[in-house]
Image: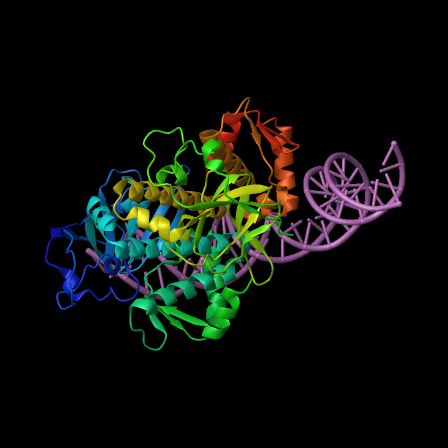
Length: 243
Length: 243
DNA sequence: CGTATAATTGAGCAGCGTCAAGGGTTGTGG
DNA sequence: CCACAACCCTTGACGCTGCTCAATTATACG
C-alpha cells in the first residue's frame, strides 16, 4: 500500500503552490531566484499514492510536513469506525501547524490523490522562530488560518442544513484554490469523492448525492471527471454564506 | 450594560487558576513567591458582569486576554441571528491564542458569569517568544490544546447524537476543571444554561432538556443550582467517549 | 470484458426541531 | 413580606430533515 520514496531533489525551486500566505513563505523557504534567501532549512521530499496513510494518529514524530502537490485529508476515526474528516489539505498547506509543537497528532493524515510533501524537523522550525520575529508572526498567521477554518467547520456542522454545508464547503475550497493557483472559467480540480464530503460535513453519501443533484439541476455547479465548475457563484454564495 | 473597571492590583499573586498547563505559566507570569521570576509582562486586570460582551467580533485589538475568574464563551453569530458557541473558557485559559497573532478575531467573547480577566499586549507576548525557546514551546502547547478542543467539537457535531454530545461536553468540561481546581465529591461549578449547551452542540434547548432529563433519571448526573455532580462517571464515559 | 468502487434513486422511518402550554426560580419594587 | 415580571426548565404533540436499507446504473481499472 505504501508507495513512498525519499529523494532530496529540491522541488521547492519550482514550487507551484507557494504563492499566497503559506507555511514555506513564512519560513523563508525561498526559490533560488528569490532575493535575499534566508535560512534554507533541511528538508526531505516524499511521495505517497492516493489513499495512502501518510501519518497514523498517535504515532511519534519529530516532523512537520507541508503538502507540495495533490490533496490530502486529516481524519479522526472513532472507536465504532466512523470517520470524521477534520480538514482538507491543499498544496502549500502544512498538515497541521500544531505538529511544530507536538510529537504526536490526534488524527490520521491520508492522501486523497497521489501526493508529494516536504518534511521539516519541528526543532528546526522552532529554532527559526526563536531568532526571527518575522517567522513568529508568519507562523502565527498560519495558526490563525487553521483555527479559522476549524471555526467555520464548527459553524457549518452546528448551525447549517445539508445544502448550506455543501455550498459552504465548495465556496471555501474554491476560494483557497484561487488564492494559490490561476483558475480559468471557474473550473477547479476537485478530486474529493462524495463520501469525503459526507465524512466532513456530518452527512451520509446518499444525502450528499441528493444535495449535489439539486445544485446541479439548479445549474449552480457542474462536477464531473474530477473537476468542479461553479456555474452560478452568486446563487452558491446565497446558499452557503447566509444562515 | 458594561460594568467594567480597570485596576492594576496584581491578582496574579494569588491566582487560583494558574496550576496546570496554562498561558500564564508558559509566559512565566509568576507569583511573587515563585523562584526565578522571569519577565513580568505589563498587564491590566479588568472585570465584566455576567452576560457582558467582552469583545465584539471584528473589533480591532492589540491585546491577548486571559480569563482569571469566572466562565466565558466565544460565540459566532450568523447573519440570521443563530449563535454558535465555539468554546467555553474556564479560569486560566486565554480567550484565544490566535489573538497573539491577529488584530481582530472572527468571534465575540461574552461573559457567562461575572468575570475577571487580564490583558497583555500581544506585541509584548510576541517579543517574549523571540529569544526564549521555552516560551515558544509553552505557547505552542496552548495552541495544540486549543486546536484539539476544536477537533473534539467537530467530531461531536459531525458524528455523535444528542446524548453523546452532551455526555462528551460534560466529560471534557469536568476534566478541564479537575486539571486546575481541587474538586470534591465529583461536584463541579457549572454556570452554563441549557441554551449555552444547545448553542454549542447544535441542538435546541428543548432537546437538551430532554437529554439531560434522561441522564438525570438514569442517575448519571445531578445538575442543580449551578453545580453539576457526576453520579456515575463510568456510564457517562460509555455514552460520551464511544461512538 | 469482468470486477470494484462511486453515484443515483426510491421507500420508509427516526431523531430532533418546532410550536405551545405550564411550572419553578430569581430578582425587583412596592 | 408580597406581587409581579422575566427567565429558565419541562413536557406533549406533531412534522421535517436527513438516515437506513436496498436496488440500479455509471465509472474506473486491470
